[in-house]
Amino acid sequence: MTRLKARLAKSPNPFGKALFAILTKDHLSESDWEDVEDTLLMADVGADASEQLVKQLRDDARITGQKDPAAVRRGLRQRLIDLVDPDMDRTLAAARPQANRPSVIIMVGVNGTGKTTTAGKLARLFVADGKSVVMGAADTFRAAAADQLETWGGKVGVPVVRSDRDGADPASVAFEAAERAKNDQADVLIVDTAGRLQNKANLMDQLGKIRRVIEKNLPVDEVLLVLDATTGQNGMIQAQVFAQAIGVTGIVLTKLDGSAKGGIVVSVQRELGVPVKLVGLGEGPDDLAVFDPESFVDGILGDE
Ligand SMILES: Nc1nc2c(ncn2[C@@H]2O[C@H](COP(=O)(O)OP(=O)(O)O)[C@@H](O)[C@H]2O)c(=O)[nH]1
Ligand SMILES: [Mg+2]
Image 1 (spheres, helix red, strand yellow):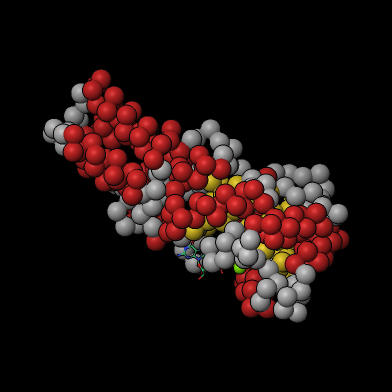
Image 2: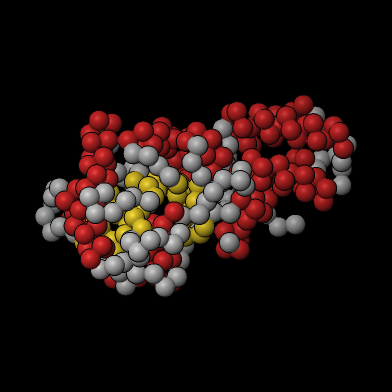
């Protein structure tokens, strides 16, 4: 969690810092308030939430007339934490103790967002926690995709169920992976999928089938939608499609290390009604953090 804060504080122009700089000016003109709103919009906070926050901050400024930077900072910090919604349940369903069966996590999302990488990092987190993990390479579009997952499996010491054939049926790999996890009495099964979006019907069909075949052996506990933070609002439309194709239970926001657009946390949660549970902060095996609203806000506010 401290890593989340430290990394975000180093990201280019965290928007919290920019807001603080405007709000501590001696006199806030109408154009300063426009700058506040523009800063939020550019960070991908989304139009409704930006408008709401500006209104709250204006009210705060009017009521308290507060000019003490420490007090402004405290007020802004609290408003931002509220915006990120600290009441959402962000625990991974799969981390909860289950009744003698593997917990199942399916990774979904558009190509290139970081599904395979996150599957590997997540496996490492579970292994570090003393859990046994099986991964399934249900991205069968290219053999390279299974190779990539297998490399991660080797790195973190987790077996990977895969097919050697390009274009094999992803559902059959998912089925075998679930069977293996069950027979091995593993604690967690992580299933990686392809993110190809020929069209929505096709995607729904494929993801639906993967879920159904897994459910012949094990209930699915968690569907993690992986979103690339650097694609901002554009990623949102695709996110909607996945949310409709398969019930999403949590969001992983990747590449937050290279983005000033952390406000996407707010907009994606609002639009999908699902919490951000994990964030990707780099390409390495340890670059995955559990999302925590306070650390996030402290990170984007930067150091005192
Ligand atoms: N900087 C950064 N790069 C990431 C992160 N997560 C994934 N990547 C990189 O994004 C690229 C695509 O990742 P991959 O896992 O193959 O995406 P997939 O197609 O969704 O499975 C790879 O080069 C990853 O190393 C992250 O959190 N930060
Ligand atoms: Mg992949």
